[in-house]
Length: 156
Image 1 (cartoon, rainbow, N blue to C red):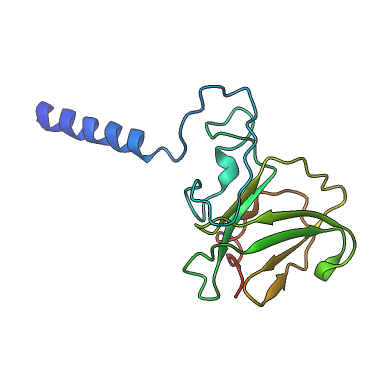
Image 2: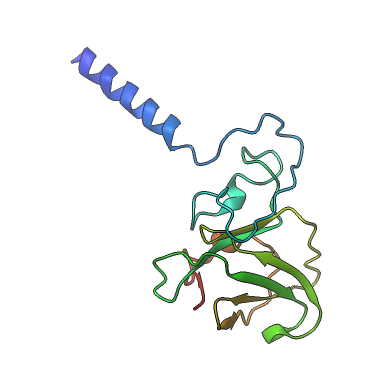
């Protein structure tokens, strides 16, 4: 019985170690510039809250100020090479504060400084369709709500 218990414990430890979602950054106290670009394939963990790891003291490289995943209208497949825009007004009005390219896996992220102030409005553009988020955002932790408490971010 002791041998079987030890085997189970070893399997559990190996599972936990291999389940870690982000690679350990050698320089945890430094912020690396990381900005998603069309067609790039450097991201991972689509649909997960990127800022669980990519924040000061986290294990991911770069401290993201905005990050998330864009899906197609089925809300099951990611939508690569879309565009995320942050505006000061709703429905693409006001000043355009930032444009973030969605990579080849459907993920977007940036370490660029973003002044959320009283809140920004998000628009996501696909091939010929732009979808606007009606609520203001004050944080870029997009996947902390989308896909969990609300629909995933999506476009066509």
